[in-house]
Image (cartoon, rainbow, N blue to C red; front, side, top):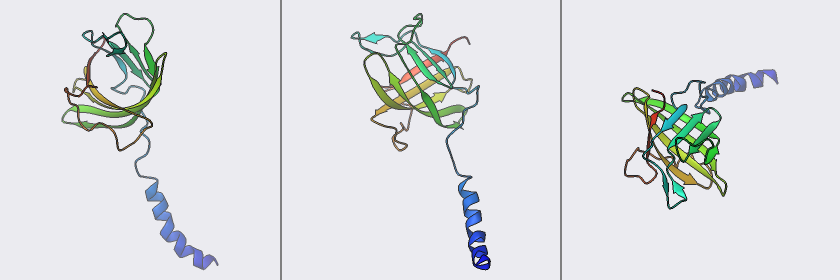
Length: 156
């Protein structure tokens, strides 16, 4: 019995070891470039409801969005996780996903972020989905996209 299992084990063991080396969930560092306070004072509320937040705070636990830079409490908040990170042409890129909520509703989003080489400017576009879908991330940062946002890192 043992002699029959040995060849099987010799074939399966490398496959098991190789499968554990594949891509897994991204594990963010405590000092990710994406983390911090981001502001754009030209944004604001539209029709009293839809808004582009003037301030976003992103950290390891998620994000908070503030209607105005001076607000003391967020208008939206929720968990946000980093799905992947890479560098391209001097910029740092992230794919993130999360759940946002305000006083009325909850929704799921996926976002593509690009940070400038210096880490002082963040651009992003988003899609809103019923549930996360790894095939539905935005594929480009397009300033003409209705979800496009651009922020400067606060304090730099």
